[in-house]
Image (tube, rainbow, N blue to C red):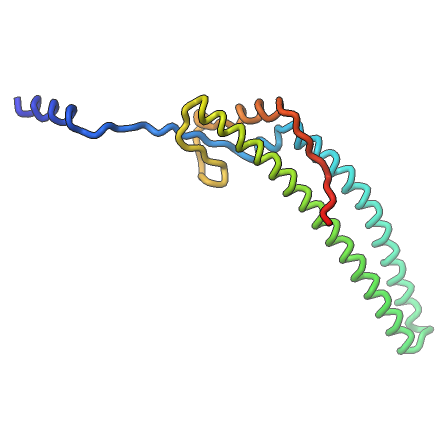
Length: 173
């Protein structure tokens, strides 16, 4: 009888327990399946190939110039040789600066376009939270592992691919 009364007392006066609905998404999975981001990656790869060809030619010319300077060491006096080395070093530094600028340009474009996607994901997730009454959403950099059951990445991918979104290479000056 005491157990029965305790059970009734416990049920009537205990605090309500709430279940928390949690969802997760994988940002890089979404990027890899986004038609918009794939189109941007193709555009970026075409740009990188063009730049790579130009930089490769320039690098080959620098290598040829370096070999000519080495070969001319016997013919040139020490002062002329040092002058040629100094000129080569200046050209090499300009080339390295150009490579760094291209890398920075590419990285800036990747970050810029990923942020556009992330903003759209945020809008989509807000709608999913309302539709599915989700209390907490975590991205893949906020958890270690999760169940496929609570992963909403595919829903986000479907909704994202239906949106008109323009990703492109942008000049940052």
